[in-house]
Image: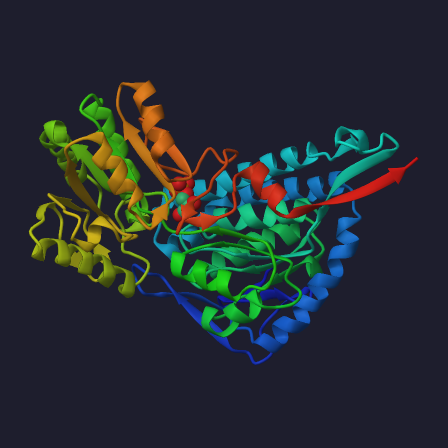
Length: 480
Ligand code: G3H
């Protein structure tokens, strides 16, 4: 099926591939070449409302299909995504300037994610309980607890993984019998359309999804407050996450937000390994990952040795265009690049040493390594979402724990040490969702629980948890 005409993409509303009624579109340019990739419909609140009504109405029948029927469609979706991984990967690359190999592997990771979601969903069962396990309860009461879908899920995806982090919301929702309103990030909307196109080609009834392309400023708040929405799952910035939490009305929320993940390096760490993991963790996709390592807290005694190793690796990172598989590519937009540069400038002005980088060409920020960063510099606390890494020297592990926990964020942390028992004790004290011992911070493997505390999020993702986040208990009590 073809949904394109001269790169004017249609979107899925009112159960069909349509333009917007007003014919309004948003032009999507590539961040690195600024050339036009295509346009997507810019929907109005009114037309979304009509489409959402259809999507809400379609859910009931979908919930009555068997898990096996849903599994068949979703597994087919995974197969089609894999068949189209080159094409969809190319679109991701163009839309968000992610290096080609990572863009393609984002699509295959998504296919794996969907298949595992299907398998796990087939094994989610309710439970049966007798009334007499509570004091004074009666054995003649039998409670049967089943899982039922919440209804219609609003899934709002980010630009940095426009397919993977969107499918990881859409797949669990559909598998558990919900319908979906999917709002892709504007930069990433074409990738999102192609992802949904594959789902429809796999046999999903079209009314089950409303694909809400349009400006966040026009339709974002409207969607969040729409009475047809029964649950919201969002990945993006902490500011937007807080806004959604304030605006939403008595619906469950799953929010995957920003981070300021520290890599804590202790005196007894394997420094070669630590340097390798830190550089990969901090700079891949130019640091535009919520889970990127965003500060290094290293003990004074080994700081020089670690810094030397990190410096050498950062100098050899490939900088350039995503087509050439460069690790460091232009950032998503000028505003982001300006912000990253402002953090570098602030640190420099306050006495940080620039070991590598501090060079910019338009949105391309060269990988930057800052040493002797102190607590009064913004880069010690703010999330750059770009390729800049501050080194903060510390005198002991308690200071590392204290600095880690002073952050407004609490996504992940890495601890590098050969003393595993001590690493576990430190992990206990860190106020974050996950602690990686002797490895970089990262979300996968995708069936592990994934969560942030404080400003980093609400609720838990990871395959099993994402499935459970879109259902509620239904209890039937038999009184004999
Ligand atoms: O940007 C947020 C993502 O969840 C990070 O995922 O660790 O696989 O890059 P990742």
